Image 1 (tube, rainbow, N blue to C red):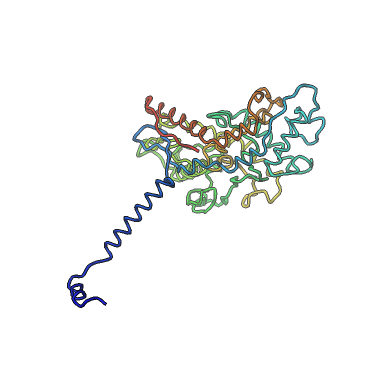
Image 2 (tube, rainbow, N blue to C red):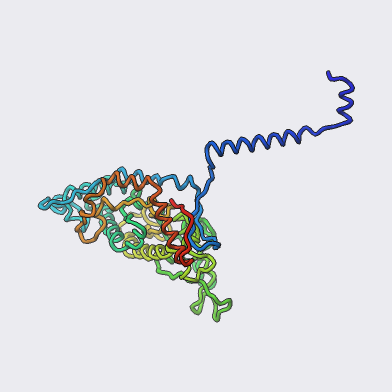
Length: 412
């Protein structure tokens, strides 16, 4: 028990004991956090890529942890790749020894066809692919092989814009019979006021769950719509939406497409544009040109190969609203990355899918590293992609700022 005089003094001189306790606690917590950061590193550290002139905010920022995490799908591809066997002449061909061989592959040797068939069955998750001539999967598969060969041969400017990457069945399918991130027409044919269809305020995957129009992919990736809504004049003659002038709905639809592309590639607006001058083609980045080729490529894929599949696919494979065939868009291949499978070269060991001529170039494979080792090194080593993106950034800044040197280096 404390002396009476002490209790009396305590009452006459009250002291706030909570303030020093709080100060000590805050200081101790700060010391603990600082110790953890020094010992284990910054968990939310970022890296950036400058895509345009300094002072314009043209940069792409990502968490370092994300950059250092490989796409988990890469491992699945590496497990299915193998070296081709260059023909020596006189071997039996697949057209002679196998049934239901896709057009363009009949001239392959049996050994190379069998290895390709084994890989395609793993890539698509269809273990009996091309076994049954009456199966819709055989008919569709024949068309898809031709589509893949066309992509690799005729769309090199997009598919291999920075380096050889290529496309195989695995690029989209990832081991599943139906690729993820395909799309269908979702807007009902119900014209509203002034002929503008009721295509907004619908929570759909196509609109990225926003109130923006849900027909952007249909308009720009299927119907060859022209993206052009900017006008330098504050006042224009005529009525927006008529007289050849784009209306506000066209701008909203454009925003919907751009929002989709951003999410499909895991980038932002400044990856392709100088956002202070959307109208000026001289201020875009190099990636803008690659994206334009990609839009044209997808338009061709949908119209030349995919739309017509509605007559082959069963009802449960068609769209829920219009009964249309599944169609492709950016995310069907990219899956949230700037390059599919983070730039892994998927075509090097599969020259059979790189040409429509039926005569694969096996000479380009000879002398290269084994398929598994070379693909694994490319897929697992992120530095290759980072160097490639740094080069893109350097070139983009040189074009936009008369040779100023780009500083950021980051990509997946």
